[in-house]
Image (cartoon, rainbow, N blue to C red; front, side):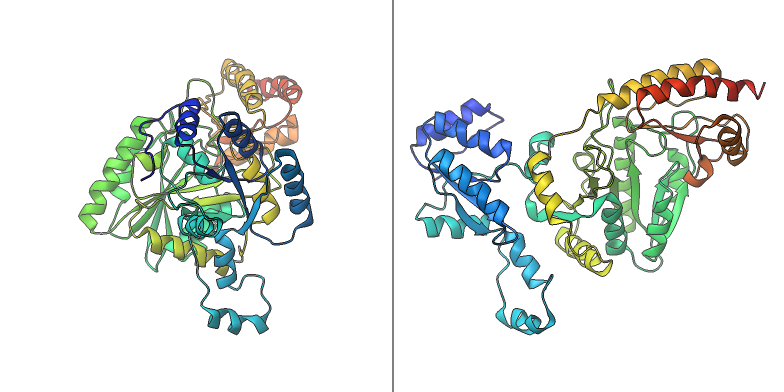
Length: 451
């Protein structure tokens, strides 16, 4: 029987436990810094390491060269095996010419998951199946470490960013007559995504003071046709972070209504700004609060690579009908043309899925803008993250206000009407701090023009 390490021990305790077994450990080696560090640490404890590389695309020369380099450094052979996702791609006939389709269908190729794949590998290498596996760093591993979950790679569907994740979710979940609830202010393209999926978007008006949820309006909007609810925290356009109390109350209402209606209400957590959080704020992990939560994520914001879209949909096992939901999301991805998230950036993010760019830069800009604008007379809700402010416009017509700011003061603001919150404007501060400082006299002059 394998040794069970209870609780949450330190790395040193884990390494010592493995060393005391005097048995080899299989390492899922990705060539990334974390798997290199793991290999080095295990060697220092005298643990025999059996490294395994899971390839998704065979015979890539730059991968072969890198593996050969590490084989020379560690003086150990690195075993190569196909990634379990490879079989799923083949069985789905991804990137296969038409003449191969019948052959693939007739072959009835297996689609092993990660545990099954490891069993096959240990059998072939002559290792016991209970051999410890150090799987290295993948998106699922990162989520498990950070949020104390039990997520598996097969619960993650990789996408071309958060927008693709949302579209796949809406198409997977929606049937004619279904309703998806969103909270204003909201990302304007939600309306296009939801309509494109054949569902109806139901908007909950904003709670104007702090942009938390207006629960009276929300409860009145829930009906037996409600299939899903979308939240976005930290929020675009306001930068507001939903508090733990807000999310707990939301979860309680959804549980009650799902039981009343006799069907699940899925909570779709749109989280591209999850890592951009300011001092004094926390972004709760929503699946811990509500079981039927589906998470949509993008690496573009945390890595400051907005032109390189890569993200995922997480469908935890706890979600009602999780296997069917995941299959529907994957099918929607193919139907919508998101056939495969770019393999290059899958490799990139596998090496840096726990890294971020200098996110403190955004908080510095917010700390300059918020007090300065308030002193000038603008009403600015406190941002808890992202890189947006959503102040009230200085006249009821936010479109006219935005046009005046642009034409007379060279300030580019986005009218709040498009976000479902008229009388506000969105201000993006993902620019260098010098530009922020140069903008302050302009904002002051704009305010004075209304006095």
